Image (cartoon, rainbow, N blue to C red):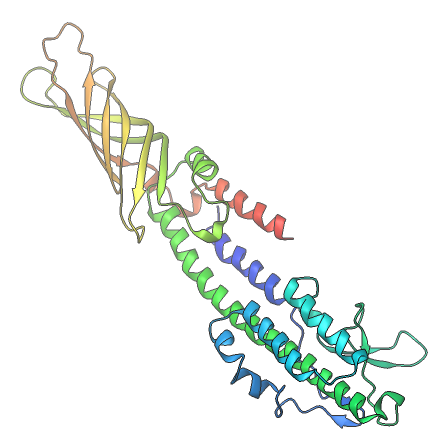
Length: 338
């Protein structure tokens, strides 16, 4: 598996989060009035440095949108119903998940015989905000003031969403970079997993969400290795012999920073000069220390042998390590998101 899949995974999530956020509106004219986004109660500067500031600082989008709804409730008390209702319905829908942040922008509707300027276009709350002061909707002062304020509020929500989701993107990128390092350490510097072990661990021990990081515990399963055995004490077969080893089952635990791991496993060794031996092995990073017992036939020698082992898979170049199980899990999550 290519170890860069983690950053790709979080990059896709970040794009999915911010991809729908609208660009801020350009200069907007409503009823002959230029909408000023820099002054007034519903300007970005007043809101971002006032009631919205704590939510922006901690990246709390839900709290920020709720605060915007409270601001609208306070400011729209005297608005005519035909202006107040669509704006209030839209911000309420945004907080409940029934509306999208992309609804909050000023758009031009040229689908009919007359071009129109609209907020909340293509929604049940679509509201026309005429640019010309001679429009019928701009003749009454309360209506005109409400349309201007509604547009200011729409731009404020748009700006707030873009700002907080931009911060979320930055934080997501930072977290992705951190997780990439952790996964690199786990998969390529930690206890080496053969492909079948990676598959077993991805099934039974890895969190459903890759975003939660690698597991602290790792299963050892049919793990191949090499080392030497030597007999304790004196007597026959006291020489040191090279062996291949197989750990049928075992368990490994990582420290907090994934720099160190330790564990225990059942151990089977296959010497070239004596019979098969079985025992137990203790794992400390890439080395093993174990005790095995062998069948020496009619020999009077019954003492166990010691085993000192090392990992074979650690010598395989990182680019050739096979961790398809983890890659497939990440791809499955991306498929669900799309």
